Length: 92
Image 1 (tube, rainbow, N blue to C red):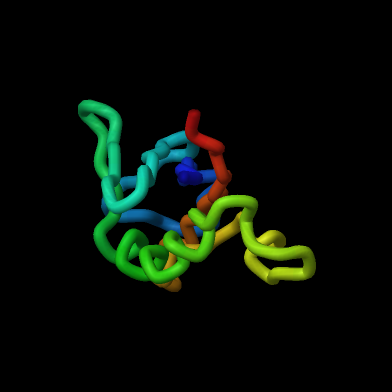
Image 2 (cartoon, one colour):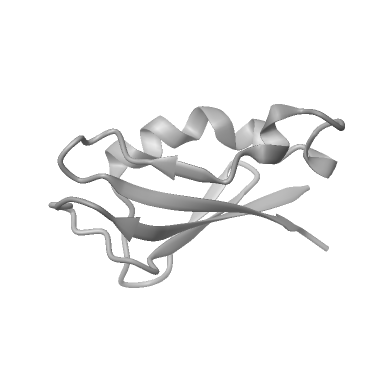
């Protein structure tokens, strides 16, 4: 199983949640782990969720698969413009 680490990489606008650069959470199968005292924006999470299962495939898909090139995501809020980096983590 491939886990995902989603981290706020930079913010171009104003995030009213507020998400901060460096904030992150883990996606482990169907489970989301958020560090104690932190949170994740529900709207950003909702828009990212459809791609999580694709990125969690072992090996990241076949050669030439477009998901091998996906690692950045932008929040759908046009005022926030929070950019996230999605990293694949091979679980033991």
